[in-house]
Image (cartoon, rainbow, N blue to C red):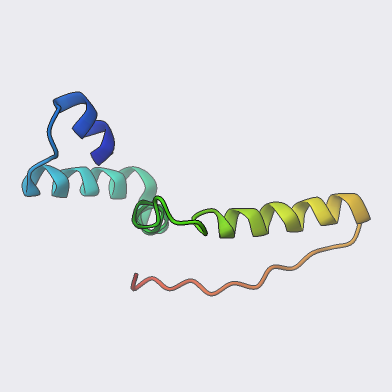
Length: 80
């Protein structure tokens, strides 16, 4: 949302505007969605940005092709 703000207003948001944008993302996406969005925003430009998504895709593809069940174990850290 901050990127959209910057594009449409031709300037970065002020601290108050950025806080309002974060609150809006939290309201729309909920606690978990906000954490995922925050993590994705922080990872922009990194080579491993889509590592989690690729892992889920690869597991689903393997299960579809082989007919074998797949279990993904994960640890969610809510403090990030």
